[in-house]
Every structure is written in structure tokens, then in C-alpha cells.
Image 1 (cartoon, rainbow, N blue to C red):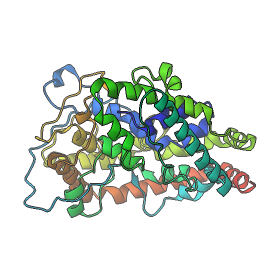
Image 2 (spheres, rainbow, N blue to C red):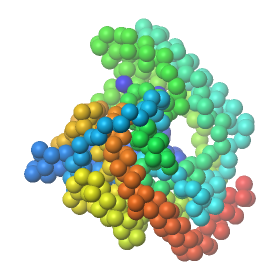
Image 3 (cartoon, one colour):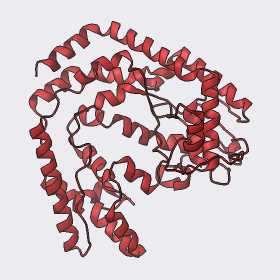
Image 4 (cartoon, rainbow, N blue to C red):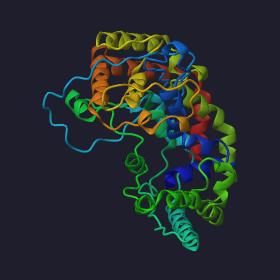
Length: 400
């Protein structure tokens, strides 16, 4: 089932608004784009009978295949594991904020005014009412959704990106990790919660329909999932978005993009893991702590061939079933080919076991503190090398 967040993603990707439309969705889209590599991998023929852990982290090359076998799951020893689990996150916010965060607010450009927020809320409500009218004409019920809770929040696109360390989030307390693991991800409920939408009455209504009607409902609302390019615009959501489009960016914003897109892209790349873009994976210090972490994980019973890092552990948890076995993903598999249970985190005991082992090895290798030291050093080097451009960026943003 596709929810409204997917439709928004389609809407944004269909626009030709330039670099900032891509930039403001960087963290989310990088994680989604990396998911196929994370769980799909590039398994070789000789690994067909063993779990494949080619868990390329978001933004990271998958040239080196990694095979990971989880150790047997251990019992929870009677620990209280009740309670709601948090949303899993591929990234961990740096604390304290690293040096480049001082420039984040300027990279975001001018902040939207209260009037702009009010106009956007009004546009959203008009769009939702149009969707409801369109669905009613096709014989379906659709309840207009409320504006997202963060609609009136000031823009923090660069802040979210520059604050992120490319390591899956784990709680600071081992006891909390035993309870939470990596959290949950990929289930319909998790997607709704991640989008800040809460319970979706329309999804509940769709689930009450028979298979044929439910499929027709989805196609009427969003278009054919197998042919989004050809059908999304003709769907009720597509028509409503076209009827009530978002305002075009100002010429001043376009000028800002043209002048500083290269600088901001370089800053984003420097803080990512992608070695191809000059990110952390090319830094020998980062490679070194990953190797130490991997050696620690071997002592916990895991088997690696090639590179490693906490991202691989989370990808393994995603492929691990409730019985403790790990699914093997065929070589060349696309996102649609991968079963939901191989790209979801349900918070099961075997998944949490992997997270606890990951946590223990991070503690043993002082992984997070050393990663933070590396990030600070890289930020300081970037600022030194680009100080003149950064000063121009600040001056341009403050002149608005």
C-alpha cells in the first residue's frame, strides 16, 4: 500500500525546481535509495546457500561484497521487553553539533514567513478536499488528511543533513538497546508514524475492501504503482496536486542556488559516507575504526568477508526473520523483488540481538567518540579550505 508520503515524494521528483528540491529530501531519499543495496546486495553464486550481508550503507559503494552470518539468537533472560519501539534511523545525530553546523542555517536560505506557512496550510487543505471529491466521483470514500504536524516548522534541511553521522542510531544505554534494538522500520504502521501522520483512516478503509477493490482504490488514489510515470498524474492525488500547485521559488532563491549549490553539495558529500564523493569511506581513520568494529563482531560469532561497519549490522537485522535465520537476496534484485520481511525491522528478539552485539562492539572500540573526532577534524579542514566561499554564503543569506 502506498501512503500519502509516497505521493509527495512523487510530486517532488516530478518538479524541475532544481537542486534545492533534491537537497531538502537528501537524508530520507539517500536512505531509501540505499535500501536495495543494503538488503539486496550483490550476492555471488557461491553464496547462494548462506545469508548475504552486502549491506552497503546509504551513499556507499557496493563494489566489495560482504557476507555476514548471524550467531545463534540468545534468550532475553526474562527482561521486560514490553512497550512501544521507536522508529529505526540510518543516521545518528552528532552531539555536540560539529563545526559545519554553524553554517547550516545559511545553507537553507531564507526562512519562510508566517504568511507563507499559512498559505501552505490552506493549499494543503484545498488539495486534500479535491482528492476527496475526485475519489467520491469514482465511488470511493476518502477522508481529507490534516496538515502534517511539522508544516509550520522553520526549515532545517541543511541542519538535518550536516548533523547526521552515517551510523545507524542506537540508544546510549545497553538496557535500552536490549529493549529497542534498532527500532522498527518498513511496516505500514512504521511508515505512517515516520511521516508524522498517525493512524490513516483511509488505509483502514482500503484494508476493509476486497483485494480487487483495494487495488482499484490504490490506483484511483495514486496511479498504478507499476507504472507511476504514466499514471500518477491522472490519479486523484496527481490531479489535486496539479490543481493546487506549490508556489514557484523566487528568482532570488534561484540565484542563491546557482551561486552556492556546488559549495553546499561539497559540504554534504564531505559529511556522508560515500567515498566516491570524497566522504568518510575514503578516510583511513574511518576505515580503521570500522575494521576494529568488524574484528570485535567476529568475536561475537559473525563472519565477514570484505568491508564492514554498523550499517551492515542493521541491514542484516532487516533480513533476519523471527526464527533467527537471515534471508538471502538474489543478485540483481530490485526493491520490488525483495519481500517486505527482508527490508523491514519488526523489533524481534533476533534483530535486537544483532543490535546489542553492534552496541557492545561500538563501546569496546570507542567507535562513536572516535567517529565524532574524525568528523570534527574533517569539518575544520573543510571550513579552512572553503572559508572565502562560506563567508560569501553567510553574507548572501543575511542580506535577505
